[in-house]
Length: 206
Length: 206
Image 1 (cartoon, chains in turn orange, brown):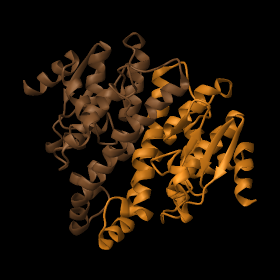
Image 2 (cartoon, chains in turn green, blue; image 1 turned 60 degrees about the vertical axis):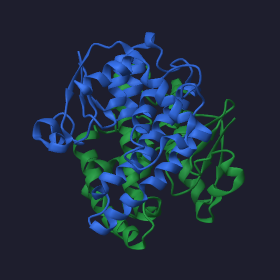
Image 3 (cartoon, chains in turn green, orange; image 1 turned 180 degrees about the horizontal axis):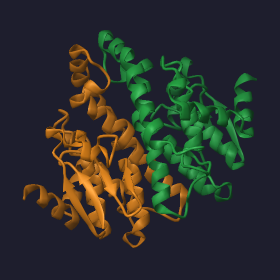
Protein backbone atom coordinates (compact mmCIF):
# COMPACT_ATOMS: atom_id res chain seq x y z
CA UNK A 1 0.00 0.00 0.00
CA UNK A 2 1.16 3.52 -0.76
CA UNK A 3 1.76 5.81 2.19
CA UNK A 4 1.66 9.59 1.76
CA UNK A 5 3.34 11.87 4.26
CA UNK A 6 1.15 14.94 4.18
CA UNK A 7 0.68 18.22 6.04
CA UNK A 8 -2.45 20.33 5.89
CA UNK A 9 -1.72 23.71 4.35
CA UNK A 10 1.17 22.30 2.31
CA UNK A 11 1.49 21.34 -1.34
CA UNK A 12 1.12 17.66 -0.42
CA UNK A 13 -2.63 18.21 -0.75
CA UNK A 14 -2.16 17.90 -4.52
CA UNK A 15 -0.77 14.38 -4.21
CA UNK A 16 -3.46 13.44 -1.68
CA UNK A 17 -6.20 14.56 -4.06
CA UNK A 18 -4.58 12.77 -7.00
CA UNK A 19 -4.33 9.50 -5.06
CA UNK A 20 -8.02 9.78 -4.20
CA UNK A 21 -8.98 10.60 -7.81
CA UNK A 22 -6.89 7.65 -9.01
CA UNK A 23 -8.73 5.23 -6.74
CA UNK A 24 -5.39 4.21 -5.26
CA UNK A 25 -5.01 2.01 -2.22
CA UNK A 26 -3.21 4.40 0.11
CA UNK A 27 -2.90 5.67 3.63
CA UNK A 28 -2.01 9.14 4.83
CA UNK A 29 0.34 10.12 7.63
CA UNK A 30 -0.49 13.65 8.76
CA UNK A 31 2.58 15.64 9.73
CA UNK A 32 2.54 18.72 11.95
CA UNK A 33 5.02 21.02 10.24
CA UNK A 34 4.47 23.73 12.86
CA UNK A 35 5.87 21.25 15.41
CA UNK A 36 8.72 20.58 12.93
CA UNK A 37 7.76 16.93 12.45
CA UNK A 38 9.62 17.13 9.14
CA UNK A 39 12.92 17.71 10.94
CA UNK A 40 12.65 14.71 13.24
CA UNK A 41 15.16 11.89 12.68
CA UNK A 42 12.49 9.33 11.84
CA UNK A 43 11.22 11.52 9.02
CA UNK A 44 14.67 12.51 7.78
CA UNK A 45 15.32 8.78 7.36
CA UNK A 46 12.40 8.73 4.94
CA UNK A 47 13.02 12.06 3.25
CA UNK A 48 16.36 13.79 3.91
CA UNK A 49 14.99 16.91 2.17
CA UNK A 50 12.90 17.51 5.31
CA UNK A 51 9.82 18.43 3.30
CA UNK A 52 6.43 17.03 2.45
CA UNK A 53 5.16 15.31 0.41
CA UNK A 54 6.92 11.96 0.51
CA UNK A 55 5.22 8.96 -1.03
CA UNK A 56 6.40 5.62 0.30
CA UNK A 57 6.00 2.83 -2.24
CA UNK A 58 7.03 -0.82 -2.28
CA UNK A 59 10.02 0.21 -4.38
CA UNK A 60 11.16 3.16 -2.28
CA UNK A 61 10.34 6.75 -1.47
CA UNK A 62 9.33 9.39 -4.00
CA UNK A 63 9.46 13.13 -3.42
CA UNK A 64 8.71 16.34 -5.37
CA UNK A 65 5.08 17.01 -6.23
CA UNK A 66 5.37 17.04 -10.05
CA UNK A 67 7.20 13.69 -9.99
CA UNK A 68 4.68 12.15 -7.61
CA UNK A 69 1.74 13.40 -9.65
CA UNK A 70 3.14 11.94 -12.88
CA UNK A 71 3.85 8.69 -11.02
CA UNK A 72 0.23 8.48 -9.87
CA UNK A 73 -1.04 9.16 -13.38
CA UNK A 74 1.24 6.50 -14.87
CA UNK A 75 0.52 3.96 -12.12
CA UNK A 76 -3.28 4.25 -12.48
CA UNK A 77 -3.75 4.72 -16.21
CA UNK A 78 -7.43 3.84 -16.12
CA UNK A 79 -8.05 6.99 -14.07
CA UNK A 80 -6.91 9.00 -17.11
CA UNK A 81 -5.16 11.67 -15.06
CA UNK A 82 -2.67 12.64 -17.79
CA UNK A 83 -2.26 12.26 -21.57
CA UNK A 84 0.13 9.34 -21.11
CA UNK A 85 0.39 8.25 -24.74
CA UNK A 86 1.24 11.66 -26.18
CA UNK A 87 4.70 12.95 -25.24
CA UNK A 88 3.90 16.53 -26.29
CA UNK A 89 0.63 16.71 -24.36
CA UNK A 90 2.27 15.01 -21.38
CA UNK A 91 5.05 17.59 -21.51
CA UNK A 92 2.50 20.41 -21.50
CA UNK A 93 0.99 18.94 -18.35
CA UNK A 94 4.42 18.60 -16.79
CA UNK A 95 5.38 22.15 -17.79
CA UNK A 96 2.27 23.48 -16.05
CA UNK A 97 3.02 21.53 -12.88
CA UNK A 98 6.65 22.52 -13.01
CA UNK A 99 5.68 26.19 -13.20
CA UNK A 100 3.52 25.74 -10.12
CA UNK A 101 6.38 24.04 -8.30
CA UNK A 102 9.41 26.12 -9.25
CA UNK A 103 7.85 29.57 -9.72
CA UNK A 104 4.43 29.85 -8.03
CA UNK A 105 5.19 27.78 -4.93
CA UNK A 106 8.64 29.38 -4.67
CA UNK A 107 7.08 32.85 -4.82
CA UNK A 108 4.66 31.87 -2.05
CA UNK A 109 7.45 30.38 0.06
CA UNK A 110 9.01 33.82 0.39
CA UNK A 111 6.13 34.78 2.67
CA UNK A 112 6.71 32.30 5.48
CA UNK A 113 10.01 30.66 4.53
CA UNK A 114 12.23 33.58 3.62
CA UNK A 115 14.82 32.28 6.07
CA UNK A 116 15.73 29.71 3.43
CA UNK A 117 17.39 32.45 1.37
CA UNK A 118 18.35 35.16 3.90
CA UNK A 119 19.29 35.47 7.56
CA UNK A 120 18.80 39.22 8.04
CA UNK A 121 15.27 39.80 9.43
CA UNK A 122 15.02 42.98 7.36
CA UNK A 123 15.53 40.94 4.19
CA UNK A 124 13.08 38.27 5.30
CA UNK A 125 10.45 40.92 5.99
CA UNK A 126 11.07 42.50 2.59
CA UNK A 127 10.49 39.15 0.89
CA UNK A 128 7.22 38.73 2.77
CA UNK A 129 6.14 42.20 1.70
CA UNK A 130 6.62 41.47 -2.00
CA UNK A 131 4.67 38.19 -2.10
CA UNK A 132 1.30 39.67 -3.13
CA UNK A 133 3.00 41.26 -6.14
CA UNK A 134 4.85 38.12 -7.25
CA UNK A 135 1.84 35.84 -6.70
CA UNK A 136 -0.36 38.23 -8.65
CA UNK A 137 2.06 38.11 -11.57
CA UNK A 138 2.14 34.30 -11.46
CA UNK A 139 -1.62 33.91 -11.41
CA UNK A 140 -2.08 36.55 -14.10
CA UNK A 141 0.10 34.41 -16.37
CA UNK A 142 -1.94 31.32 -15.49
CA UNK A 143 -5.19 33.20 -16.04
CA UNK A 144 -4.17 34.73 -19.36
CA UNK A 145 -1.86 32.16 -20.94
CA UNK A 146 -1.64 28.76 -19.29
CA UNK A 147 -5.15 27.78 -18.18
CA UNK A 148 -7.33 26.35 -20.97
CA UNK A 149 -10.59 25.58 -19.16
CA UNK A 150 -12.79 24.18 -17.86
CA UNK A 151 -9.83 22.19 -16.52
CA UNK A 152 -6.20 23.24 -16.71
CA UNK A 153 -5.49 21.23 -19.87
CA UNK A 154 -8.91 21.75 -21.44
CA UNK A 155 -11.78 19.27 -21.45
CA UNK A 156 -9.92 16.53 -19.59
CA UNK A 157 -9.35 16.61 -15.85
CA UNK A 158 -5.70 15.85 -15.03
CA UNK A 159 -2.94 15.90 -12.42
CA UNK A 160 -2.63 19.65 -13.08
CA UNK A 161 -6.01 20.36 -11.51
CA UNK A 162 -5.45 19.29 -7.90
CA UNK A 163 -2.10 21.08 -7.98
CA UNK A 164 -3.58 24.36 -9.23
CA UNK A 165 -6.41 24.01 -6.69
CA UNK A 166 -3.85 23.57 -3.92
CA UNK A 167 -1.83 26.65 -4.82
CA UNK A 168 -4.78 28.90 -5.69
CA UNK A 169 -6.04 28.02 -2.22
CA UNK A 170 -3.06 29.94 -0.81
CA UNK A 171 -3.91 33.23 -2.53
CA UNK A 172 -6.01 34.57 0.34
CA UNK A 173 -3.15 33.96 2.78
CA UNK A 174 -0.85 35.69 0.31
CA UNK A 175 -3.05 38.78 0.36
CA UNK A 176 -4.37 38.31 -3.17
CA UNK A 177 -8.08 38.17 -4.02
CA UNK A 178 -8.70 35.12 -6.21
CA UNK A 179 -11.60 37.02 -7.81
CA UNK A 180 -8.98 38.97 -9.80
CA UNK A 181 -8.55 35.78 -11.84
CA UNK A 182 -12.01 34.63 -12.98
CA UNK A 183 -10.79 31.45 -14.67
CA UNK A 184 -8.79 30.39 -11.63
CA UNK A 185 -11.64 31.28 -9.26
CA UNK A 186 -14.17 29.29 -11.29
CA UNK A 187 -11.73 26.37 -11.39
CA UNK A 188 -11.49 26.36 -7.60
CA UNK A 189 -15.28 26.29 -7.31
CA UNK A 190 -15.48 23.50 -9.90
CA UNK A 191 -12.87 21.50 -8.00
CA UNK A 192 -14.75 21.88 -4.72
CA UNK A 193 -17.72 20.01 -6.15
CA UNK A 194 -15.74 16.87 -7.03
CA UNK A 195 -16.41 13.91 -4.74
CA UNK A 196 -12.70 13.20 -4.28
CA UNK A 197 -12.05 16.78 -3.21
CA UNK A 198 -15.01 16.80 -0.83
CA UNK A 199 -13.85 13.54 0.72
CA UNK A 200 -10.28 14.71 1.27
CA UNK A 201 -11.24 18.12 2.63
CA UNK A 202 -13.68 16.44 5.01
CA UNK A 203 -10.67 14.64 6.48
CA UNK A 204 -9.16 17.99 7.38
CA UNK A 205 -12.36 19.07 9.10
CA UNK A 206 -12.59 15.79 10.99
CA UNK B 1 12.56 20.47 -36.85
CA UNK B 2 12.80 21.31 -33.16
CA UNK B 3 14.07 24.78 -32.28
CA UNK B 4 15.63 25.46 -28.88
CA UNK B 5 15.85 28.98 -27.51
CA UNK B 6 19.01 28.88 -25.45
CA UNK B 7 21.31 31.23 -23.56
CA UNK B 8 24.85 30.39 -22.58
CA UNK B 9 25.22 30.35 -18.81
CA UNK B 10 21.56 29.42 -18.34
CA UNK B 11 19.85 26.14 -17.51
CA UNK B 12 18.89 25.69 -21.17
CA UNK B 13 22.27 23.99 -21.60
CA UNK B 14 20.67 20.85 -20.13
CA UNK B 15 18.07 20.70 -22.91
CA UNK B 16 20.71 21.46 -25.54
CA UNK B 17 22.88 18.59 -24.32
CA UNK B 18 19.91 16.23 -24.16
CA UNK B 19 18.87 17.05 -27.73
CA UNK B 20 22.40 16.32 -28.88
CA UNK B 21 22.57 13.06 -26.91
CA UNK B 22 19.19 12.03 -28.36
CA UNK B 23 20.38 12.50 -31.91
CA UNK B 24 17.50 14.89 -32.49
CA UNK B 25 17.09 17.03 -35.57
CA UNK B 26 17.18 20.48 -34.00
CA UNK B 27 18.44 24.00 -34.33
CA UNK B 28 19.47 26.42 -31.61
CA UNK B 29 18.64 30.10 -31.31
CA UNK B 30 21.15 31.75 -28.99
CA UNK B 31 19.62 34.46 -26.82
CA UNK B 32 21.56 37.22 -25.13
CA UNK B 33 19.91 37.47 -21.74
CA UNK B 34 22.26 40.27 -20.67
CA UNK B 35 20.72 42.32 -23.49
CA UNK B 36 17.29 41.20 -22.20
CA UNK B 37 16.44 39.33 -25.42
CA UNK B 38 14.00 37.33 -23.31
CA UNK B 39 11.89 40.43 -22.64
CA UNK B 40 11.51 41.43 -26.28
CA UNK B 41 8.00 41.19 -27.75
CA UNK B 42 8.99 38.61 -30.34
CA UNK B 43 10.24 36.28 -27.63
CA UNK B 44 7.32 36.94 -25.27
CA UNK B 45 5.07 35.79 -28.12
CA UNK B 46 6.90 32.46 -27.96
CA UNK B 47 7.27 32.24 -24.19
CA UNK B 48 5.32 34.71 -22.06
CA UNK B 49 7.32 33.54 -19.03
CA UNK B 50 10.26 35.53 -20.43
CA UNK B 51 12.74 32.77 -19.67
CA UNK B 52 14.84 30.21 -21.45
CA UNK B 53 14.65 27.42 -22.42
CA UNK B 54 11.74 27.29 -24.83
CA UNK B 55 11.51 24.37 -27.23
CA UNK B 56 9.45 25.04 -30.34
CA UNK B 57 7.92 21.88 -31.76
CA UNK B 58 5.49 21.20 -34.59
CA UNK B 59 2.74 20.97 -31.98
CA UNK B 60 3.60 24.09 -30.02
CA UNK B 61 6.05 25.50 -27.50
CA UNK B 62 7.31 23.68 -24.44
CA UNK B 63 8.94 25.31 -21.43
CA UNK B 64 10.40 24.24 -18.07
CA UNK B 65 13.56 22.18 -18.13
CA UNK B 66 12.27 19.01 -16.41
CA UNK B 67 9.29 18.87 -18.78
CA UNK B 68 11.49 19.42 -21.84
CA UNK B 69 13.99 16.78 -20.72
CA UNK B 70 11.25 14.18 -20.20
CA UNK B 71 9.78 15.12 -23.58
CA UNK B 72 13.15 14.54 -25.27
CA UNK B 73 13.53 11.17 -23.54
CA UNK B 74 10.04 10.08 -24.56
CA UNK B 75 10.37 11.40 -28.12
CA UNK B 76 13.66 9.58 -28.78
CA UNK B 77 13.23 6.31 -26.89
CA UNK B 78 16.05 4.59 -28.73
CA UNK B 79 18.49 7.00 -27.07
CA UNK B 80 17.49 5.46 -23.72
CA UNK B 81 17.68 8.73 -21.82
CA UNK B 82 15.17 7.71 -19.13
CA UNK B 83 13.60 4.52 -17.72
CA UNK B 84 10.45 5.08 -19.75
CA UNK B 85 8.75 1.75 -19.08
CA UNK B 86 9.05 1.85 -15.29
CA UNK B 87 6.86 4.50 -13.60
CA UNK B 88 8.77 4.29 -10.31
CA UNK B 89 12.21 4.63 -11.89
CA UNK B 90 10.91 7.38 -14.17
CA UNK B 91 9.56 9.19 -11.11
CA UNK B 92 12.96 8.94 -9.41
CA UNK B 93 14.52 10.60 -12.45
CA UNK B 94 11.86 13.28 -12.45
CA UNK B 95 12.24 13.86 -8.71
CA UNK B 96 15.96 14.44 -9.17
CA UNK B 97 15.39 16.91 -11.99
CA UNK B 98 12.64 18.61 -10.07
CA UNK B 99 14.95 19.11 -7.12
CA UNK B 100 17.50 20.72 -9.42
CA UNK B 101 14.82 23.00 -10.84
CA UNK B 102 12.81 24.04 -7.81
CA UNK B 103 15.48 23.99 -5.09
CA UNK B 104 19.01 24.09 -6.52
CA UNK B 105 18.37 26.47 -9.42
CA UNK B 106 16.14 28.61 -7.18
CA UNK B 107 18.90 28.84 -4.58
CA UNK B 108 21.35 29.91 -7.28
CA UNK B 109 18.92 32.48 -8.67
CA UNK B 110 19.10 34.40 -5.42
CA UNK B 111 22.62 35.43 -6.38
CA UNK B 112 21.85 37.39 -9.55
CA UNK B 113 18.04 37.48 -9.63
CA UNK B 114 17.11 38.48 -6.09
CA UNK B 115 15.00 41.30 -7.54
CA UNK B 116 12.42 38.67 -8.36
CA UNK B 117 11.55 38.38 -4.67
CA UNK B 118 12.57 41.74 -3.13
CA UNK B 119 12.91 45.39 -4.16
CA UNK B 120 15.04 46.67 -1.28
CA UNK B 121 18.73 46.55 -2.35
CA UNK B 122 19.70 45.57 1.19
CA UNK B 123 17.52 42.47 0.94
CA UNK B 124 18.81 41.64 -2.53
CA UNK B 125 22.40 41.88 -1.28
CA UNK B 126 21.58 39.68 1.70
CA UNK B 127 20.19 37.01 -0.63
CA UNK B 128 23.36 37.13 -2.71
CA UNK B 129 25.45 36.76 0.43
CA UNK B 130 23.71 33.56 1.52
CA UNK B 131 23.98 31.72 -1.81
CA UNK B 132 27.22 29.83 -1.04
CA UNK B 133 25.57 28.42 2.09
CA UNK B 134 22.35 27.33 0.37
CA UNK B 135 24.14 25.89 -2.66
CA UNK B 136 26.49 23.96 -0.39
CA UNK B 137 23.53 22.44 1.43
CA UNK B 138 21.90 21.47 -1.86
CA UNK B 139 25.01 19.82 -3.27
CA UNK B 140 25.76 18.07 0.02
CA UNK B 141 22.34 16.41 -0.25
CA UNK B 142 23.04 15.43 -3.85
CA UNK B 143 26.48 14.12 -2.91
CA UNK B 144 25.31 12.14 0.11
CA UNK B 145 21.80 11.00 -0.77
CA UNK B 146 20.64 11.53 -4.34
CA UNK B 147 23.57 10.72 -6.64
CA UNK B 148 24.07 7.00 -7.29
CA UNK B 149 27.05 6.96 -9.64
CA UNK B 150 28.75 6.76 -12.00
CA UNK B 151 25.71 8.56 -13.46
CA UNK B 152 22.98 10.23 -11.46
CA UNK B 153 20.64 7.24 -11.63
CA UNK B 154 23.38 4.61 -11.48
CA UNK B 155 24.80 2.67 -14.40
CA UNK B 156 22.56 4.26 -17.02
CA UNK B 157 23.15 7.74 -18.41
CA UNK B 158 19.92 9.75 -18.39
CA UNK B 159 18.29 13.18 -18.69
CA UNK B 160 19.40 13.81 -15.10
CA UNK B 161 23.07 13.95 -16.12
CA UNK B 162 23.14 16.98 -18.41
CA UNK B 163 20.98 18.84 -15.91
CA UNK B 164 23.29 18.09 -12.97
CA UNK B 165 26.29 18.98 -15.14
CA UNK B 166 24.68 22.32 -16.00
CA UNK B 167 23.98 23.28 -12.41
CA UNK B 168 27.22 21.96 -10.91
CA UNK B 169 28.91 24.15 -13.50
CA UNK B 170 27.55 27.17 -11.61
CA UNK B 171 29.19 26.29 -8.29
CA UNK B 172 32.36 28.27 -8.94
CA UNK B 173 30.33 31.40 -9.72
CA UNK B 174 28.36 30.74 -6.53
CA UNK B 175 31.58 30.74 -4.51
CA UNK B 176 31.54 27.02 -3.78
CA UNK B 177 34.44 24.68 -4.57
CA UNK B 178 33.07 21.66 -6.43
CA UNK B 179 35.92 19.61 -4.92
CA UNK B 180 33.93 19.57 -1.68
CA UNK B 181 31.66 17.07 -3.42
CA UNK B 182 33.83 14.30 -4.87
CA UNK B 183 30.97 12.43 -6.56
CA UNK B 184 29.65 15.58 -8.20
CA UNK B 185 33.14 16.68 -9.24
CA UNK B 186 33.92 13.30 -10.80
CA UNK B 187 30.57 13.39 -12.58
CA UNK B 188 31.42 16.76 -14.13
CA UNK B 189 34.73 15.38 -15.40
CA UNK B 190 33.01 12.26 -16.74
CA UNK B 191 30.45 14.42 -18.54
CA UNK B 192 33.16 16.56 -20.15
CA UNK B 193 34.53 13.52 -21.98
CA UNK B 194 31.25 12.69 -23.74
CA UNK B 195 31.24 13.52 -27.45
CA UNK B 196 27.85 15.27 -27.23
CA UNK B 197 29.10 17.51 -24.44
CA UNK B 198 32.33 18.31 -26.26
CA UNK B 199 30.39 19.18 -29.39
CA UNK B 200 27.95 21.50 -27.63
CA UNK B 201 30.59 23.24 -25.54
CA UNK B 202 32.65 23.79 -28.69
CA UNK B 203 29.72 25.80 -30.02
CA UNK B 204 30.10 28.17 -27.10
CA UNK B 205 33.77 28.62 -27.81
CA UNK B 206 33.09 29.18 -31.50
